[in-house]
Amino acid sequence: MDDTLIVYNTEMTNIQEVLDSFNNITSTMIFTMQEEINNSVNFLDVATSKDEHKISCNVYRKPTATDIIIPNDSRHPPEQKLAAVRYLVNRLSTYPINETNKKQEYDTIKQILHNNK
Image (cartoon, rainbow, N blue to C red; front, side, top):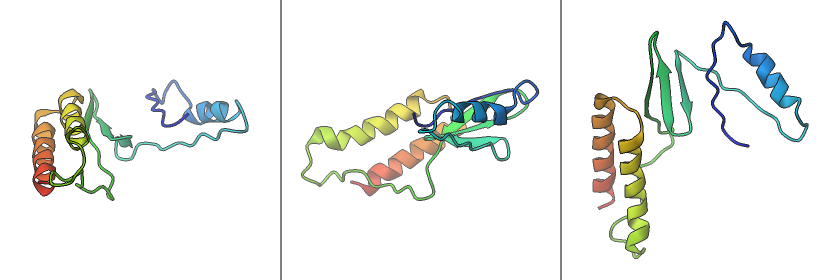
């Protein structure tokens, strides 16, 4: 098992008890927890934040992320070169991100494509 996101109501759920229950299932798996900071948590490649009325999402890149994909002038097959581009565009079009963040992500994709010819 890897990477599970749990959204819960702190008034109804004691998350430490949930974590302890998971860890008591078997001794061969150890669950850890990352709690939100400033009403935000990064999960996989999604930055999720909340305010009083809604949860919003944005694309998350680790600080160590680079903009390197297979360069257009490499000898890789075209299908492999386009796989990263399809992933970036698909993520942009399917993640529930607001228009401002979509524009920012679109500009980032353009920059990645430009940098990789």
